[in-house]
Amino acid sequence: MWIKSSQLHEQDALAKEITPRAMFESRRVLLKGLTGAGLSLSAMGSNTAFAQSTPVTSNAPKALPLIGAHSNVAGAYVVEKATSQADASSYNNYYEFGTDKGDPVKNAHTLKTTPWSVQVEGLVKKPMKITLEDLLKVHPMEERIYRMRCVEGWSMVIPWVGYSMSELINKVEPLGNAKYVEFVSLADPKTMPFVGSGILDWPYTEGLRLDEAMHPLTLLTFGMYGEVLPNQSGAPVRLVVPWKYGFKSAKSIVKIRFVEKMPATAWNKAAANEYGFYSNVNPNVDHPRWSQATERRIGEDGLFAKKRKTLMFNGYEPQVGQLYAGMDLQKNF
Amino acid sequence: MRAWLLHRHAKKTLLLLCLLPFALLLYKVINDNLGPNPAEALIRATGDWSIRFLCIVLLVTPLKVLTHSPALIRFRRMIGVSVFAYVTLHLLCYAGFDMGFDLEDITKDILKRPFIWVGFLGWVFLSMLALTSTNAAIKWMGVTRWRRLHQLVYAVAVLAVVHFYWMKSAKHNFNEVIVYGSILGFLLFWRILAAFKAKFYSTHA
Image 1: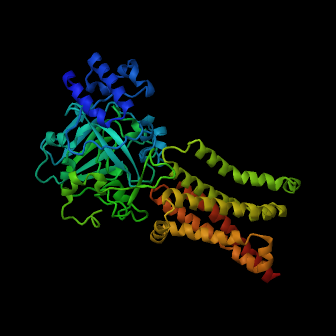
Image 2 (image 1 turned 180 degrees about the vertical axis):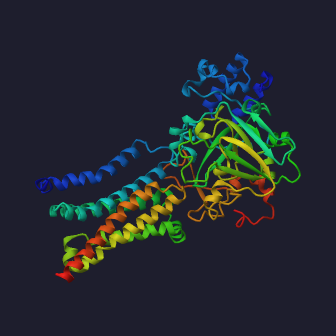
């Protein structure tokens, strides 16, 4: 993807309002580097020389830059302080690499993200096996700053980079009887130490109703904080569904399947009474073992701060509320 | 070994050892060294140390019998009180950092969540044991009744494992639960076996 230099100033002006200063400034340098080097983002999968030659990435030496343009999607920008990149990339749930939140950052270096391709199959007119390079070119990258609420009761604000899942869905043209989309994560016991353990039924699978997957906020995500996703955050491609608990957003996706019946999902199979198919963030529906009314914002709510109130649909009710009109959310949790 | 156990500094050394995890946690709090979610880290760490001290205190009697070192019993009270201290810290961390010391919220939470009330009940039992941990209490209650009351520690062990199991079931990872559960299970089993043996010998003597 090319960012035209004429668009840059406008994007920067908008981005400045919601982006932490340091991040914004580093992005300016990045953009300069990008323009200067004449790089396209599709180089992400192969060009490692760039990361080594650019001075900007010195604080995260291996990460390649991935810049998203300003997004016009309603709800794309949360006006809240972004969680620090250090916290967001060291406090993760990615069970394939361990169940402690400090495990993925320690163990995920073994994940091999090149070459990578995603199989799109099932009830679509144009099934395809699409390489990461081609997937990156489906639509221009956008920046989205979303709240991320974990089912465990903590939250972050993360600047993601990607494009609406609907762009890919439109490309493969779902058939009339496609009602759900299933996402399958990589399950490679050679590189993922916990695949094969009895914790979950591998591969990790997740699912959305087709209209949820088509919602413009549902982001097919390739980067965060202006860089390609680190392995522990689900590189090289993951989903981000900001109004649902974090586990609904499948990581390291290798297969996207369009189906007629509600697909089985990993956590629902493990504990159906605790993790429903929808798993929308809802302060009024408690987890059987803990309340969901409040949450702790990582890095911000100190030891003695009272936890903050969790918002209906994680604050995305104006955008997504109508998807669930008339539905009993106590039953369809 | 015996000389070592009876050394006049032995108890002071043990006290320092018992305080060591607390000091380490305090150090981490002061230096903001508890990771991205310090509240969770503190609740977890105090819980971990609670169950570890519980394992240690229940190890004293079997160790005493198996190694024929009656002197070991001098240390049991201090370790037992440490269990209570760490569980109290654990409860305070939960009440403070998770619930913001809101008594109404805490009461609701305890009633609503079996995993919390199981833990809370364990603390109530332990506080009864801590309150009666003095020589005066033993004298006042009489040894037999005191012993019976202090057998509550076995119930505490079961509650602790249930509490831990429930907490870990969210993660579906029971490795640690299995480790602590086996240790505590083994220590309780040893006592049952010892009780049977004693009964057998007393009726067949």
